Image (cartoon, rainbow, N blue to C red; front, side, top):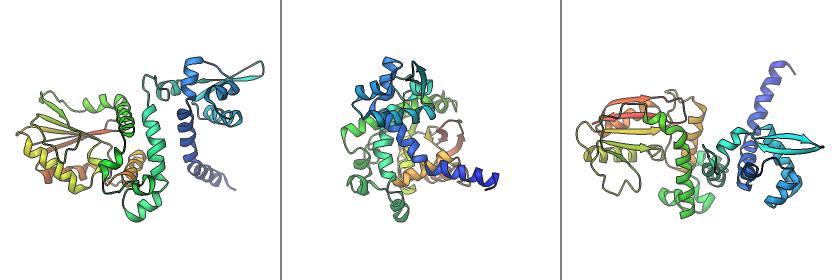
Length: 297
């Protein structure tokens, strides 16, 4: 096998096993590995297994995978391996971490990961997979996404965690000082009345819905607001040829699996706003997961 073939096979193998990497991280988080180590410091795999009520052999394997993934570090003392969190784990994977993504990890593990087991069916049928995954009709998106109080709370905490990392870049992308009264749109916005405001924030909303419903929502906002008002949309933007960034492409595929929407290009968003009556369309890439779009009436 040539050097080039070796590189190709290495990349192929990385992709082949990618889902295992995600699930190993999810599982360590769910079992409480990172929280335990954050509170008690260096521990052996036997102690960790005993404290968390798991099989010791399985726990040792999981811990060593986390070391390879740079989620944990290990130190040998008197022939015993002692495990401790890396800075990455402390920041993002513990419940108390300053940039904790704990709830979003649980949501990804319990909901998104389960739905993606039916990605083949989603592509064949062109619709979300809540019916196959959870027995919930795919045409009732609100019921599917918020199928229990626990799921709703976990999902909302997860969104807050992501916002804590990405929010500042989005909010500072444009000068919002001309908009003294700001309304963060949420709830059942297709049925509830939309109050008058100077700026409406639609954070991770439009990507859930097909074009027709997006235009309906934007039209309702356009009718509710005065001339000069704005709409700030927070979404991840696809490149105009839709061949990147990879995260945006994966998120768009996730919208197929879990909703009725998709991620869009700047031009596609501009078309939605134009059809709803808005003008002065602008967008800015933030360099983070989410980008900013601003349009005015």
